Image (cartoon, rainbow, N blue to C red; front, side, top):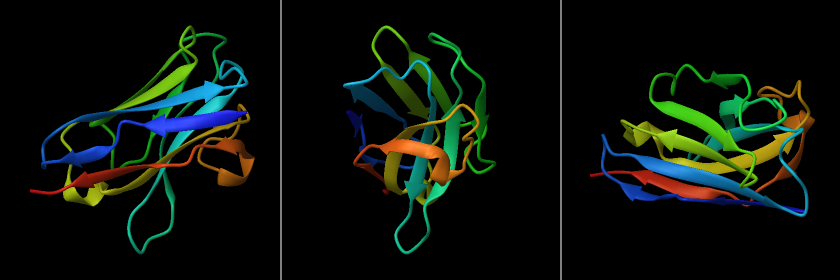
Length: 125
């Protein structure tokens, strides 16, 4: 059972990245999937989540700091969840983690059962 987060990198302010969260050993379909991030010297915080819909949909939610710039989506056939990040800002810099949890998890970290290893996002000119 493993979650693999990927797609991070160095990007200039205003740029875009797409993060992927791929699962192996289990299906993401019945789980809510959350993206969390941790900036240097700060606590980890929720960025976005998508609930289970039995396929490639789900209810989505975003932290105020990323609303309108980030889009979360899931592809049931690929067992993968994506986080499209546009108009990136230096304050978006951090390690981004994906997690799979209960349908009611929202941004409550203790309701997520599986965590990926994190992918570094650096927004800098």
